[in-house]
Image 1 (cartoon, rainbow, N blue to C red):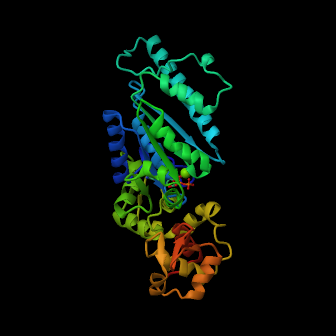
Image 2: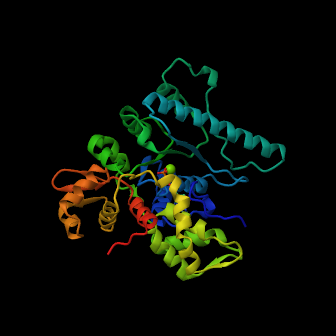
Length: 373
Ligand SMILES: Nc1ncnc2c1ncn2[C@@H]1O[C@H](COP(=O)(O)OP(=O)(O)OP(=O)(O)O)[C@@H](O)[C@H]1O
Ligand SMILES: [Mg+2]
């Protein structure tokens, strides 16, 4: 079997592990939306490489149904990679909607031609002639026309990955999309960077309400989650991990999903049992694997800065008080350095937010072979 661990791509849904509380909540929300026709939103946010895209892919793959029985949920999934305003957002949604409707049409036709039973399969009928939808109308209007006429869809699941790219106007439209247009329930799932939720609450509180009670800050894996992630690809395989080897891997990587994949990938040995010493011997190799992505995050940090950063991240908080920082032994001049390096950002009333992923602290400690006392 080729090495199943890969830090550079989101997890394949069949290898996805952990995150049970979030998945459970997502499933509940989807059920609720279907059963009670209740639209709503789910926000997934967190630092770089923590598994936002993997989580979205996982829930989508669960909701897509099977080849024989594709689901009654119309799934619109887009990752953003550049600033997207409201018009573009509607355009993207329309584009994806048409794509999914056509895809369903093709699947159904193929099944028919193979004389398969298509009873109970949603046909996703768009309900209007596309040529009758005036192309010179606004994208909002076109989206609205589609949504109002759409037939045989139980739920629309919209997923927007990396929603940080949405413009202020586009963020404002999220509320319209969820609450105002549709008679078909819409579940909007979006992912964003660590500061996304705070930004929403601060600047767009009416929009933030869509996600109230359903915002998830995803972070490190627990030991149990790490075990699941490591073992899942190896069911029915000869390759095994000793329990203690996974415990060490979890400890060394801090449970940061990207680093877990780096060290698992470095330690993998096809057909063998992976033990503690194999993991330890491969830490350097894991650092090498992670370097392409993580090496340029804090190029000007000294060893002392890295140690201060790591001590603060050990508090396991996104926002820390000056007093907590001094308690872990980082004095004001060092705090000043971390602010300069943009690792910390000074907020009001003696509070600091951690701007760089705490994973970077763990990575730098490993790379520089430093330990904190
Ligand atoms: N639940 C999970 N199970 C297994 N592997 C995971 C899981 N979550 C994340 N990973 C692994 O962690 C790495 C980063 O995941 P992913 O790309 O989903 O993170 P992200 O938060 O979307 O990152 P970015 O900030 O770059 O968008 C990948 O190697 C992925 O395989
Ligand atoms: Mg991502």
